[in-house]
Length: 75
Image: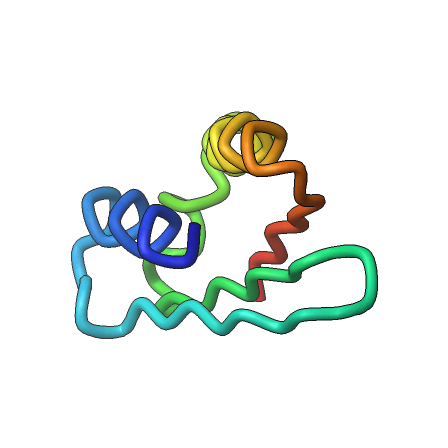
């Protein structure tokens, strides 16, 4: 799932080298922390958060198939 978030983020931004995804495993969930360049933050969030919501929806769909709980944080 980390690779999927990284792939989606890199395809959206102008500076793909600045995309960093960190995976933090907790007891009941996995947290994916997405970091991008400051000038690309608007492209990842989108108008009214639509792109961020779409990324989270795709990741949740993959997580449900694997019986996991995943949270995507944009930092």
